[in-house]
Length: 55
Image (cartoon, rainbow, N blue to C red; front, side, top):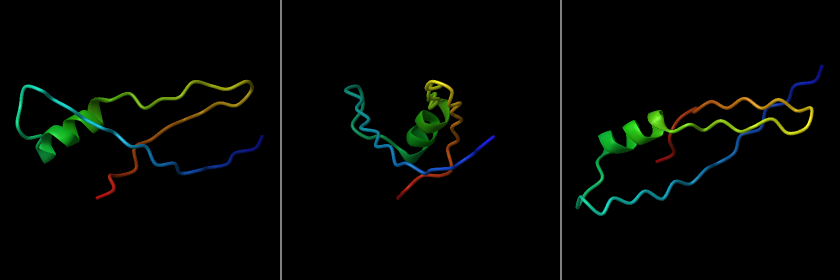
């Protein structure tokens, strides 16, 4: 069995036409409620984890 870890960066462009400001609290909620799972590819099983937020 082989395991390897790779870190990738994902950009989120977030828009809300019903507000003038998207707060840090909004961002934390969006990040924690979004499903970031990838599907398996062939015989490769993929696992994802949110490790932090780039500032």
